[in-house]
Image (cartoon, rainbow over all chains, first blue to last red):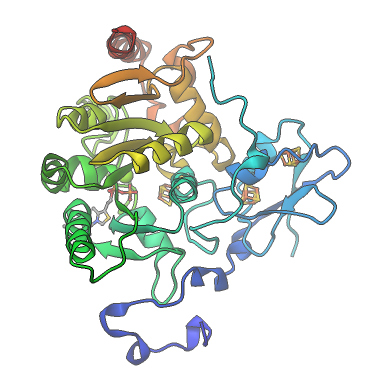
Length: 97
Length: 308
Ligand SMILES: Cc1ncc(C[n+]2csc(CCOP(=O)(O)OP(=O)(O)O)c2C)c(N)n1
Ligand code: SF4
Ligand code: SF4
Ligand code: SF4
Ligand SMILES: [Mg+2]
């Protein structure tokens, strides 16, 4: 999207309210909703990808070292990844101001 | 036996056709179901979606979470709209106005959109035999407008329009069985699925896509907000629903039923109902009654699956 969403006025919408840029929701950062963040213990991670598959917010990414970790731009802190990780190497940690 | 245990999450296609930045509640397993369905379908897909949580959270103008052509529909219309897309594009391909190509035409709606208001349009589309897939995301109530009961709300669940209290035990009618209504249309493919069983879900959606003619996939989609559970327990409750046989996973290919997952240990429904705020008020006797319903319904499916 050429412009940030806050700057788009209704006059600029396409006819039929067509949205022409796919996946543009990624400019809306749901990470700000979070009150807890998942922290991965890299050394224990068996790189299975279970956390990635179950994340409803598509907020787990594979790090360069091969382990999986949360993308905090979008992670809402639901805790599903921590609960489903088969080795229990994700801990939810409170966000601070 | 769980025939999907050999699959590895790591081997699943990394591309996403439904993106982050969507505005579903924390831990929404309905959004997870949409993500998995779109993984299985791929980019050559057109979606028509009825209003409801998934439509609202994925398309706040001017943004969209979709990476495929996606049409917003009035509450009752997605089956009608997608069947029109299928017929129209097929005609254009036949006349050479569009290159011939395999496209997934997919209608999607919540349980309210599917089992209540859009039922007529869906029944018509299934009966006409369009080459389409209809996916119902069943979170067992009208969640988007504030947890009102639908005909897919289970017996005993408290919602804002079936509130539990002195004079009421919550929803006092039984859940409508949409999958079996779809089967009654004699379509080639019907399946039930749940996002807590992602491989089973994706395999079924792929099979629906490969089936010529109409296919129907009914997905139990855990909604922490409406079910009154912790967001981190969303996957767990889907698993409990399946292991308690409240929501059996099966497919019906050309009328032939087969269970795709048989729990190694069937758990009492009490273990599934317990901990969910919407069932908190139930008495022991009511839980027993629900157990009896579940036992009878599950035995029917087992019997149909065992038939040769
Ligand atoms: C004709 C019509 N009636 C009512 C509504 C208001 N409405 C929008 S979404 C919705 C509930 C959707 O429930 P469901 O289909 O189960 O989807 P969910 O939000 O639970 O995913 C309602 C009642 C509407 N948009 N159109
Ligand atoms: S806490 Fe929830 S949103 Fe965040 S990465 Fe884990 S599963 Fe995804
Ligand atoms: S589920 Fe746990 S072990 Fe598996 S990749 Fe994620 S963090 Fe690593
Ligand atoms: S109300 Fe339920 S289904 Fe709707 S977005 Fe929230 S968790 Fe998902
Ligand atoms: Mg619903």
